[in-house]
Length: 578
Image 1: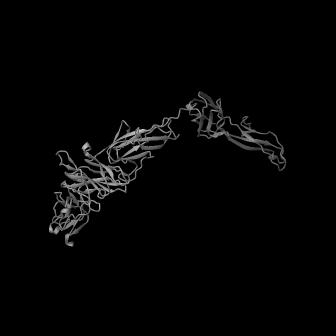
Image 2 (image 1 turned 45 degrees about the horizontal axis):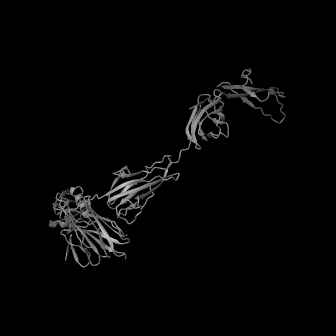
Image 3 (image 1 turned 120 degrees about the vertical axis):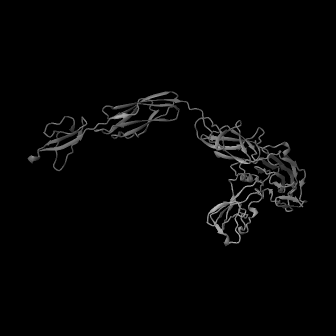
């Protein structure tokens, strides 16, 4: 090997695998040349070949040979891996990173071997795949090496991982390894916890931390706050009503509670397997819900309990229950302007419009509290085009404005409210404005077509709250049934129980509980009262509800059952005997 001036090249940089050879005619011979740079530079030399060629000019040849000296340079982010405490038979992994430099002359880094000094059955390489060596790290790149530790004894472990490389300055990279094998902890069962959603927030519920529930109503309960000492996932939830030492469900007598059921529907799921469930309480009293959770190892928790206190949120709350299956008893609340009976008709039905029951679950009993209606629409008609212009009230079934040319307004739009309807009218210039004229127009020649309640009127809410609701209707036996009024208007209210169907069973005993402003006095619990057959009624009691600011309501108990021997007629909202 020589340079341009035919001077000998430095020894050992380029080297041929032979110095002499014979080449037969037509049979080429290979020559292998190795390149071992001594520095990070570019080498340019010639391979000088002398032969006995016949042609004198070809007896000496110079073949140019070049090569660039490159050098790998290894670095690592750590020289020690601590695996900490690891359960016997379990595997823990740790990573470290080796990098190859990216400067001028940087070459690939080759790792030829991975060796552990001891504990070969405990430490191992998870990645990269070391079955095919060498592992090459290109210039400017990095390699993540994952080491696993799987102890098989309770003791301290230590080892050295050695990496053999072609970095001339770091032929062997050593990584110190340590860890400790510890006893596998006992698999502990999960710990069930119940949280209830109260005013939008999750709060813990227990036997000593009860939560309130306005009945009838739903309470959202969550088991997702349960924990596991071994951090195993919680995979199962079992909700039930709790039982006492006599195996009796802890709930108010007569309750037909359920989980994940719609209020008032005859679908009664007595348990739930959801992580979040909705518990439905139907009557006033104390409930206790139980939760058992199961973790991924199938271990079950001890039960957690949630005490729920059902209360009557309405000013008037009435409950009915009875003691026979399959039978159907109906609870009635009758609004009367005078204390008078309202027995069923001969076909076994109650027809009074002021009777709240299964066939009339949310009647509008009117209100002495005035509130305004607002009439307004982008649509309008000219008075000259029609003989009569009318709009509808909030319920869409009454005329609001009648015959504006005659300057009259249908009083049904504002029955007993003591105020005028509020409508939009148009003047001759086409400008619209509000008017309270009873005729629903003023001066202009148009009247708009829609009319609805003015919900901004403070009296609107009060007017709605004096209507009753039958919140639960039971047709499968036992009850309960509920009727509620948020804020009753002053007047007389009769409570009646009607035996709609005895299902061929015969007599049934019934109980009624009355709550006024959330309180049930002993004298407001009625029954048991025996109803012998279908189409028999029990006149339970009459409530004389006073005006605001006066004395408490008066409850008068009726002792005689109603029969079909009395005929009645109902006129408007006054039901009287005839």
